[in-house]
Amino acid sequence: MLTPASDLQAPSAASGAAPRRLALRGDLLDYTAAPVLDAPDTDGVRWRPDHWLLIEDGRIVGAQAEAPPEGWERVDHRGCLVLPGFVDTHVHSAQLDVVGAWGTQLLDWLATHTFPAEQRMADPAHARATAELFTDALLAHGTTAACVFPSVHAVSAQALFEAAHARGMRLVGGKILMDRHAPPALCDDVEGAERDCRALIERWHGRGRIAYAVTPRFAPTSTDAQLAMAGRLLAEHPGLYLQTHVAENIDEVRWVRELFPAARSYLDVYERFGLLGPRAILAHGIWLDAEDRARMAAAGAQVAFCPSSNLFLGSGLFDWAAAQQAGVAVSIASDVGGGTSLSMRRTLLDAYKVQACAGRRVTAHALLHAATRGAAQALGLGHEIGSFEPGATADLCVWRWASTPAAHRRQQVARDLHDRLFAWITSGDERDLVEIRVAGRRMPAAGYAPV
Ligand code: GUN
Ligand code: ZN
Image 1 (cartoon, rainbow, N blue to C red):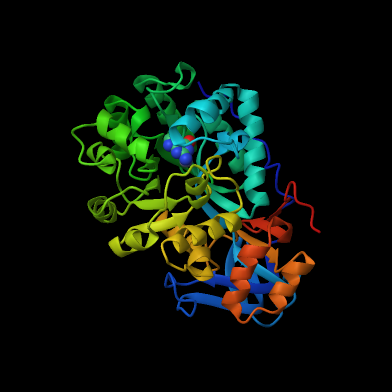
Image 2: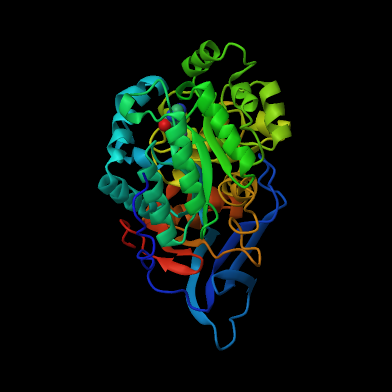
């Protein structure tokens, strides 16, 4: 059952309406094309130091070096870096309480830490408090758009959508589907789950900036009947997303082989049930083979690469270059709570380290692109988020280049823009965050007082 509407209230989390015409001054960085993965000197970098970004009615209308004329409210952040808001393409709102839970691999971690935490989301008050905390925490890390797993409970999806809607955030999410191999308190059934999904889709999909994602947790926790139901929903509503996990951990892959002996591979389980398509976001994909990658590319499905989770849970090292060569879009995601931080800066650095283990040096541009415009495009939202293209919604963050003496000195000795950016990703943190805007409206950065 869905809880009664509380989303008719005025948005509570934004500090006032956006000015109709707003000009923000700073060092503007966004991307116009996908950078080469490992060459710092690459096309597609749009670097406009000390420019004014012009925003009208919450949308970007242009940028210029000169100050705007009368009639524009000016906010002067000269000397700061202005980036599109980050897009986290895979994160669990119900897992804040298990971040850094020590000592286990995926399947143990789910049973020992994660399932108990998710059971608490059955309580509507807990679900609402968690959704508020989670959406504020995303913003406080500079993340203005996300693809989110709440829990199996419809009330947790409802609370998540309400919190994101109140903040005006772009959010893709859906109630988790799981009808086996989990504690009874976390299992739904095909009919009940279908009813809940249909009610949530009816109520939320396309409302404001919310989009619904059919969300089977992963193949082991859904029966054939439930996966078939998920496929039916997708076939009936072509605008829906599909999000799930695939080929994350060796034991998990072995288990899927036992559970679905007729499938060619883990990925094939999803394909057989009609779940692969251009709006499919598959987290991890560490243990995919070449045929899987080709199938994903043909379907237009994307991988959410979750480096901090993969390192923390000891799942393995994702092969970004192989995915790219196969034509599979790759975005970067925190996967909290398997991931250890909501910070996309920390996560990008982990992505660099994972690739470095395979002898590849991914550039700051490739990393930042994957967390902004690249992710937006993979989600089919490139017109709306991820860049400063005229017409895009003004979801953006203003960051100091440095907030500590050591980080400041590192910036001073940087050799060029790429060196500056890589040092920025590496040496700073969310203390650098000066301002977060969603559709031009300034949001409070809960938890982070400017230094
Ligand atoms: N596979 C199935 N569920 C989960 C989850 O919650 N987190 C991660 N990292 N992998 C999963
Ligand atoms: Zn996950």
